[in-house]
Image (cartoon, rainbow over the protein chains, first blue to last red):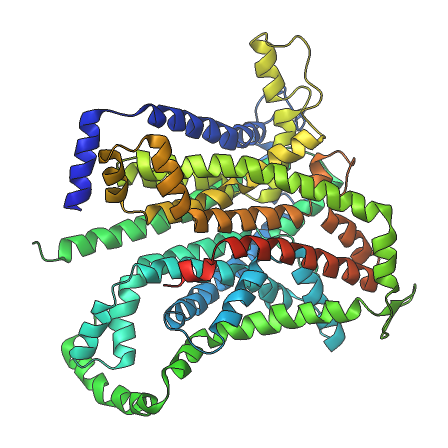
Length: 286
Length: 307
């Protein structure tokens, strides 16, 4: 920390290099590129009742938001939203638990570790629709009906688990094993060591993995679509809407989704910062 | 927090449970930890993959599919000119998008890691990059329609600035729109792994090189790029496979001029023609596998990640 501070100070004396401004400008452009279309859809979701999916705005209203919850064509949106949240919650818990265990397990080489690693890589890079296709064929062969918490859950895990595993590698790499050795020396059992030393230290990383898995699941379309069965999740419902109707309702859904995401992310970040602040306060001062 | 007496009370019980484990070789503990992951990957990924490989050799007609060992599905697929066309078009999209996302991703990661000095500002910048990704990819794809359309925001701005007198038509429902959407959707996949690699580079190393008289360019070429190649490889694999496996961007943004490999395959699946769809899937998987294996050869991703 000291050393980093000193070299930063040295850099500060020299002033910002030209590359700083060039790359900063590029980053600014990228943000514009990222947010431009998003801002357009946030704006258009407040389109007047007679307006369409493109500019110009014809007045301003909230009718498209009402449309989401109104019974009728869009009646499925709130229900599908509920299903997506439920599925994403289960996925995020499972992914966190399984990837933490795997992240710890991969710290030493074991027979088959290479095969398992490349299996995870393969699962990550497999074109998404094909995973759903294979699982769908399997369910058909076994005579099982595809559904939300069986086939769809499974299809999404093949996507969130490799991500969770890679994220946990990064978290576990930063973990100082001296803490575990200290726990051993003090007579902790493997379980106590895990429960009271390893997991609490890794917790911010674990929350990050859970949060990432939630996002991946909530937004998943290609792996889920062939194995969802009768009751759709939100992305699949949205996809069906694109082909049937074009109205600013879609944009209203986007605006609401973003608002909900902000809320979830905000709460999670607040928890992590809170946790870190408490730790910093509790840590002995040098 | 568990109180001390509780912890002490728990001690003998767990000791008893833990004792036999001492006699097991260490890999048993590892396998117990990775067991759930292995189970999910084998049952839900490996077996279904084997299944569609098997089905790709099956026979089918209008009423059903039949176990067989025929190569007709592959012959039909590989002798159709449309197959070659769609692979060439997907591959060229992948290469173009890869080059653009690599340029943006590398430079953004470089900016965030080496140029932003405050950790709080860096976190905020990372979040700014990530926030749009919490909106559905489908909605972010169609968000480009009102932005790029004839009366869209971009044309209004360009005309407002008198850069052009009539709206630009090539912006929407074209290859241009497809590439813009891909870059928008996938750049973060490049930023993440590269930034992760760069964050591991010791700033002292760069400082030492600068003190020894290295130019910024030499620092970039001889320190930063070699040390971030794991991230570059990982990001490239992710972007490449996402584009090759794309399902709706091409369909939605090209205005029906071109299909993607997977959307052609999805059409066959919805027509219940599973064996030809499976053959097409096998060819795509082999294609992607060769590409990924090629990239992984350049860098030993495993050695870099699991230390």
